[in-house]
Image 1 (cartoon, protein in one colour):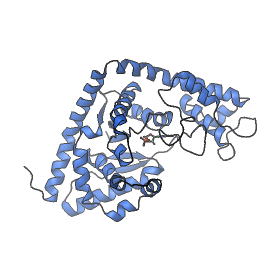
Image 2 (cartoon, rainbow, N blue to C red; image 1 turned 180 degrees about the vertical axis):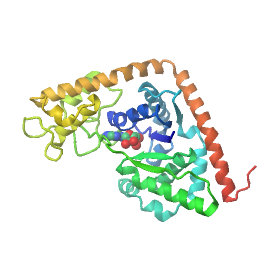
Image 3 (cartoon, rainbow, N blue to C red; image 1 turned 120 degrees about the vertical axis):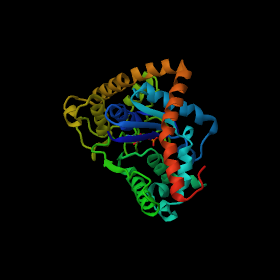
Length: 326
Ligand code: AMP
């Protein structure tokens, strides 16, 4: 059985893109792989953050992951900072990665451009990601295009470390996602739907009330013309709605296009499907928030399980590097 890992940053409220692109695949994968899922709170510190909100968002993300169907009997769910070995290995790997490697990362260049004060942790973020993967002996990492450069860095660092200091890390295989559903912002179909960075008018948050979800879908930007057809280049707004409906109903966007005679009709169907998808998640979320001790217990148990392997990896690494181990 392969071992996989997936992380979600608590930088905002989870939205439907997170569900379709990361959470729903994880819920399916937990039955076929040895799956670790973590709330990447350390990664949330790489850009300006609000300490007053971080712990609340961390708990919200963890609770939503459980509400969406992750089952602690089938996966290991934990909060990254509660497994301190992530930080330990991060530093040790910084001693094997180079400045040039980190500086070449396209995401670093793009994110750094948008900020006045660039945190050093933004530069070394891919090394923390390498630590997340190598710490748990992950053998396969499914990646979309935006993460493939970071995974290459993980593989390079692990390979170099093994060659120099003896076999220490499992070098993970990169599995390109065949179809990575990419949900676009409903008010700007040229931008990816995201937790942060927009007004939220075109973002379907998993905890939005049904009326808000319907309103956002009904106001989605469509394109000139009236006929519903699937054309990503010429009609990106309509194509996004068709893609969304297709992923929620397991249909094909082209076939769905033929079923609607107006944009309003298509939007109504999308709103219904979105509301049906989030309804059971919101119900379960309400139950779980009524009993936060249960969520805490799941996270404690997850961290403890994750630490068993993580501490062995850190021990192997410190020994290989020649540090005096107790
Ligand atoms: P983040 O915490 O924002 O880095 O996102 C966590 C996961 O959600 C990543 O694996 C993303 O690929 C996925 N994700 C976020 N937004 C979208 C989107 N609009 N469409 C598809 N997947 C998404």
